[in-house]
Image (cartoon, rainbow, N blue to C red; front, side, top):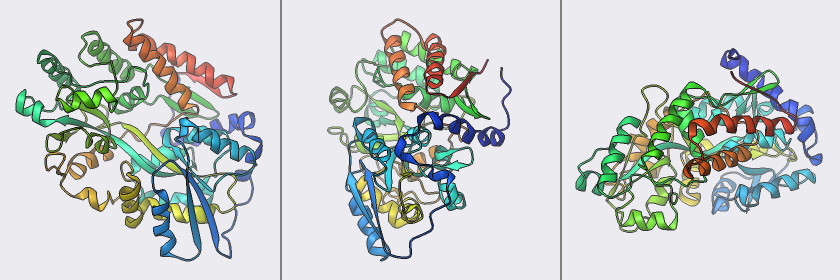
Length: 444
């Protein structure tokens, strides 16, 4: 097995690992902004543009605009990243234009950096702001010493469950461990109900489970990306889910928040969702669910971490922006100032707050829907603090997630198992990364 170097040393090579692919992949309009002198703040008023799929983002920007008279932010709604938003952003950058700021999912930040589409914010003093951010959020925008975006929201994992049926009807308690999860799933299945459903083609749950177990699948070392998707923690996790699938203890007929899921959840036939904290807003639309649902910790292993992360976005300053200093000033306000956080929660319904010490005023209160729980304070906040900070996203994450999704479909169809599929997927992903000019090794 390739010896793992200390985390700090390994990450110092991350910029080199990204840079190794930049020459081959940077769009022609991206320029060399991160190799040139920093752009000083403007002497006069500045107008910034911000492309995002967050709803009502202009209302957030309006609050900032009213707080000072030097910077005006204009927000424009675009489709979600993989629904056309990313293509629109990258096409604009390639043409030398585009907005000053764009929404980029946290897992896609390295890919945008690799494409030369982002401004390295460490050159604008953003490292001094690290203390103001949730560590689990800030870790996801770092590659090496470079800071490629401002974390906008995250999705620490938790277990949302129908307490009325779970405890009241079946006499069960939320599982604290994955072993207990299996036992509970067996009891729920005997009762003719389903503990949890999974979208059979959604590969994003695999890194979610793996990072909680303590795996680090992608590690930049010097100018090379080292893949470690078949390490002992991952194989233990894979073996557990192979058993769950073999015994049909979760449903793979449809994913959470689909139409059939809402119908089944509304009837009390599907009892839980284990996933990102942003799921709370979606569960609150379960028909007749008010007062019946509650929130518990994500089941965990004897080792590993309290929770994994699923979803979340950043606000990235594009490499074509002429006002990165002013863009960063706005994003500091939006993502750490209580007024900015509250405005994003109220108007845009963001996931978990990226700020170090402020979860949002409305989230400090007890929830009528979730059985009177102060679940954000009592559950989600500890889950956010219990993240795997060593986890690093690789470039090409969407293609990696797609490959994992294809593998899940094969597992669900009976053609493979997770313990067989993940090493095969790792080989395929290594080849995909090599084809775009990245140096890749697989840990032995």
